[in-house]
Image (cartoon, rainbow, N blue to C red; front, side, top):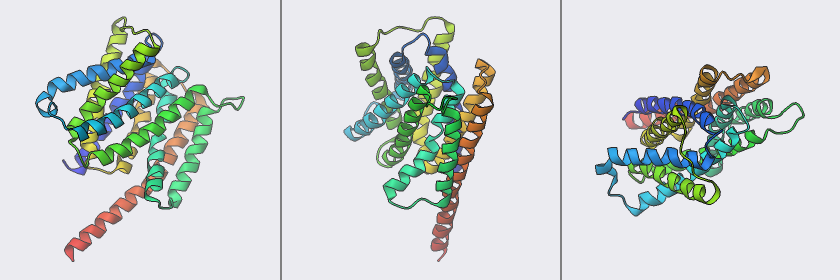
Length: 298
């Protein structure tokens, strides 16, 4: 797989995840959050195990260990996101979660112990201004749901970075499939401990759960580690910045959501900051490739 092909796959994953905010919003009013997470990942895991049973049945301890780590991160991402969406719109949740893209390079800077570039600093400042418009109400208090969405964004960034490391050491398909199983297991335990499990009622809820399971989870979280092996974590985060754009489009068409002038202004500013911060990584990546090519010629 070439990097270009991997990027196209990640872009399609981003579109599927943009649609996931609509599915979650349609379910959250009648189905408990932990139950939704357990159902989406449980169904996705069973489907992928059946399709790839010959390739994933034999798995080693290292793969299971790494899968459990990214699986519990998935659980944390979507539990916080589900609770956040109880108190905010699907469009706002999409843009708030897109701050993952700014968090990935920041965490990479902490890990590599290198000072951030000017573009990163400018990008962080711009995103902060956009977040202020999107999350601070007229009485200057932070929206309750927005805080949950920001926590989900942080966990998402950690998930991207760890996935990028793990795919270098274990089978990517097995990692992608088994993380779904662990996420479902953690959510199922929480469902029986803290909630009263219920099944979806009505066609809309079943379509939403199956959409979350098959499109957003089975396809999205299995193809992500496979494609991520052939690209960089910064590039992955940049492509995932398309997710809130898709979520806003789908929310407007399907849910008739309108974030208002202030909300859309904040969303545009967030995207501006995201693109500003990540452009430096594309420049550095191009310079690195040119250096490698010149060394080969020499």
